[in-house]
Image 1 (cartoon, rainbow, N blue to C red):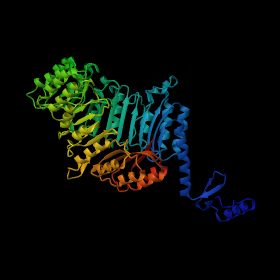
Image 2 (tube, helix red, strand yellow):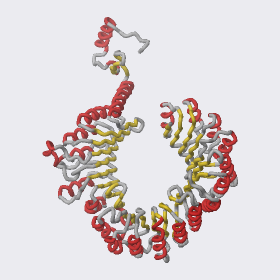
Image 3 (spheres, one colour):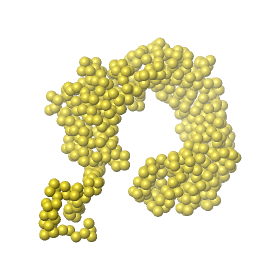
Image 4 (tube, rainbow, N blue to C red):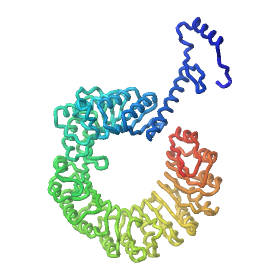
Length: 640
């Protein structure tokens, strides 16, 4: 438009006469009128008209979401926003109907919504392409002035799901969804996933049962149904009702939840024999009377029990209910007392096919109790697993641990010296702990990253012995001096290790690199790791950088995290030496890369066909570079 002369006066009248004569049907050459920023009228074809219209609509919608402090991803069409009033909601709805590229909408209505407010949202969604909806009504029951409409305020929600586009719907903090409806439910054939979260629902009245039945009938394509409520006691009746309703439907998974972190019951209704029951029956969490009906009803199919304690009132029911299907018990609470352990023994006696009892954490004062339990059931073959130790361990506690780990079916999975409070001035206590852990087998993870932890030669040798065990999969360690570096790193079993994180101080970095390289070069095949990080933040000399380059070249990695503080040329040489055949995530930390250097890096990553995420620290990344990577399914981000 800049180099074109605009028509004026007589020229425009001539054009008008020409069009009246030649275009009596006013088709106008199939062109559409637009107005430029400068105010000029511009006639364009339908494709350009639509593109220009959509661009303006998207910008208006983006500005609206930003004004609401929301989130909008233009590439995926995802929106997350909180609306605090009817006025803001109407403004948002107007922008939403213009932006046709919104696919996934998460919205919270944060005011006392009326029946009319829900109808406005329903009408808006009918005009959009939204296929995934997460609607949070904030437990609103409606304003006092809308009391006459409360018995039908759920109608709009059901009608919303019948618009033919929505495939996945989550309704959060919805009250009366099965009660407050006056209209018959319409077909929701496109719906595949439905999650309903109410404060409470019992589903006992004729209206509620009729609505629930109609829901299943009108959703012939529904595959996943989740019912969630805040009152644990309300769960059994709706579960039994829907279990019967979905038995002959398309639903493959029915879940009844108390909350998403504490799943109470999940069952594939067409395969009821493979039931898994999750219950928290600790005295500190729930009144056992609330969950007792679930145990009585489904205890014989119980496969997995998750408990924060074994309440005294629960013992009798558990003994009667659990059967031969129970395979594992997981104890989440580190505050289990002797009474819990004794009651656990009674429950275990009723489970002949039990394969494992897992303590997520165990404190020092529980070690003797666990040993007593292990010895009491020592004739059984199931494993007793302590996932992690916590607390302050004295020499006596370590002796208890040593005795515990001598029991044939007991194992400790994680030794995290960063979480255990050891008297730092007492090397004897740490020596005793390491010696105790050496007694057992099955350590899968070793963490020793504390800067102020001083290790004797005896402890270093003990840790090296743990590292040499084939069960060890994860090693995170801070190497303080050369003897420790050589002892630990040369003990690694490269065929079994999966994650490796190494920190070495400025004075010990070269020795650590050489020890690591010497250990790796003894392997005849490529070493495969899921994650590797070697702290090179102090790395300056070229010799050390060359050592790191040789180390990386010997690895086949899924994820790599490295400081690359050397010259850009050295960093590029490192990237060019890497094996990218398995790599999904790459994190590179540089002092500073400009956008041209970033592009060179990206060009050299073309062969990394498995990459899903690239994070470049202190790098100038342009919008075009992000879009370039996103078009290949790779997330590119920067962090300062």
